[in-house]
Length: 257
Image 1 (cartoon, rainbow, N blue to C red):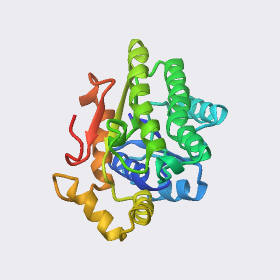
Image 2 (tube, helix red, strand yellow):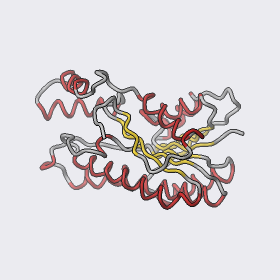
Image 3 (cartoon, rainbow, N blue to C red):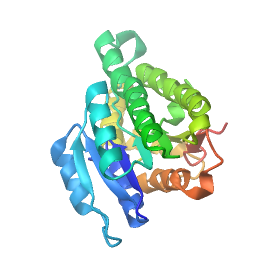
Image 4 (tube, one colour):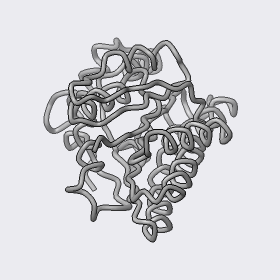
């Protein structure tokens, strides 16, 4: 029987690669993104050799009503076996210069979005009796504050790690597992923007920033989106059914617990 997963922020970046990897492994994907064009494009590119009927949905992850609509609709029509809360934003600025508007937007998407979507997904799973799995995208910035120019992002991702544990504890009685992944320096459009911003803040070139990231990673290379996607696939698999409340580091050793 085909399993169905909703992936937020799957129109690009890590989310898109999570969708690609899971589809290759037989999952039926609902690609959710605030950008409809990106969501539609990802859904159209997914492997459907196992008869999956992939879909896309427009979703502002901070909107409880819309999140509930998506979760309930998918659960009722397709079954809801898993949910990946991956949508995120970042703004790179010095702490002393960070406007409160950036802080509010970062937490609205990165933390409130995980709460809103996780709650909607869990309610739908409980309603249909699904012993599902939820995975939240955190960051190695959710385990350490030694991250320059990303104070609001750090705050949001620490929150995701803590929220994941709280969700896991309360949802265990329903057989729902909740874990997070903590990527490092991943090659995505978001990282390209961050390298440009950090270069400006440091007064160096983006290439030198890229080398700083590589030097900071013991495996001496930048992380690829599929490195994250493969771990998400494991956390959604039956092999991980006794793992819950974890924040799994996927960063090439750039931060070790």
